[in-house]
Length: 170
Image (tube, rainbow, N blue to C red):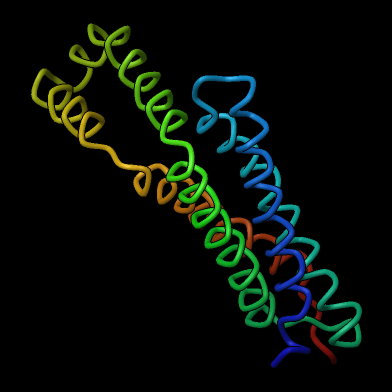
């Protein structure tokens, strides 16, 4: 089993650690590092998945890769990245409640500044529900959102990369 997923563990773990480092680094430069960290995740996730699948194919599976193997390796890579990122960001926000308050305030400011266009698009009810959900937000919500936005694109990228790198023995 380790042979099967060794590259997924390595690249998923590295991507998760890089996501935590990116969140920490961005928090020094921006009041709300969450949005830019999501962009970073959109870049690092497909790279980690590609490298995990490519290394599995070349070094553990003698140059062959079935679609199912690619999907399995990719799944482990992006799930590990998401879990490590989730735990790391959650702990950072628990340890630094001032950062959490800053992120929450930034999200409330964006919502207040965009009120007219949001109400015009989705209505007053939706705006009020969004406002209430941001007011009730906890650190877990931010960390979970980050993890989900690594899992959803991760699945998409895994499918594409598995198809591109697939090579079955004849």
